[in-house]
Amino acid sequence: MFYTQQIPKLAFALTSFGLVVACSGGGGGQGGATQTFGQQNSEAQSLTSAFLDGNGQQLSSAIIAPDDSLSGQGTGTYDGFITGESDGNAFVATLELGVDLDALSLDGTASDFTLEDETTLTGTINGSGGINDASTVLPQVTLTLTGTLADSGTDLPTQLALDGNFYQSGSDAVGAIAGTVEGEIGNNPVLNGLFASER
Image (cartoon, rainbow, N blue to C red; front, side):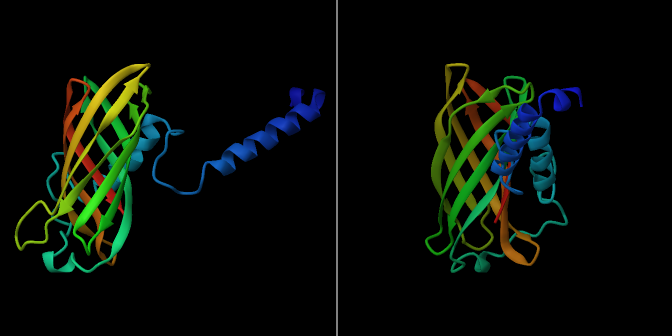
């Protein structure tokens, strides 16, 4: 109150700036670099735990999409997260998958890597993969993301392999994709890696 009374113009300017920042944050998107690890990881765990347990196994309540429901479903974008541990630090990252169920192919991008100690790894990793609609063959989705992340100027060559399946989400038989993640960030293996995304 003291500063508001003494310097109303500055208070107004700061309030206006705050409104601009708040508005620019978007509404209801998945994760983001402006969130803390705790906030982003909470969203990631909430999404992932709808389909998988902590070991990446399908929950009994989760329904894998039938193979005959995959082809001919057109294209879509699935937004979600990757979680795991590397070099003794838990991490979370945002994930975007572009899926073409007509061509049985997909591509992906992961970014906004944030460590449990709030370190942010800059950079983006990208890749492409395939969709398997053969009867009884799992996983349905395989994708490898590669690129270079950086920690305070130190380059970290990164490769993550995602294996997962389509899951029913609400009334959408192919509304989500979830599975396991293996690979390396720098020279450190990724442990307990999971991903989940929804369209």
